[in-house]
Amino acid sequence: MPVLQDLATKQDVTQSDLATKHGFQVTMETSLRQEMQLMETSLRKDIQHLEITTNHNLMLLKQRMVIKLGSLMVLAIGVMATLVKLL
Image (cartoon, rainbow, N blue to C red):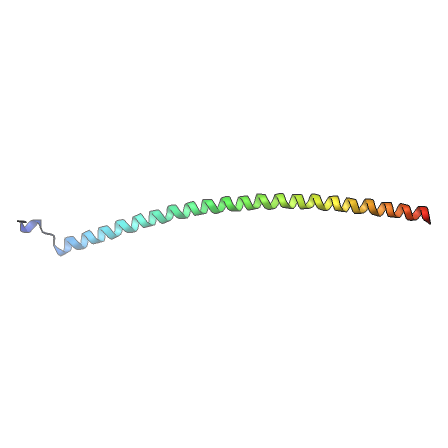
């Protein structure tokens, strides 16, 4: 049979409840901070990858434009040379 002093008082229960809630809140905050850090790291990597891919694609586009412009110039010079010979 329990002794009267071994029984929890209302204050004991309230303090225990507050301590439990505080512990849960701290655990949740820590967990959320860790998840946010992981998401930030992942986003930074994704942004870096997109930047590298975009820069690579722009470089390829520039190369293709230079080749096309060069081809057009060669064609134009050929047409001009032909016209000079004919006229």
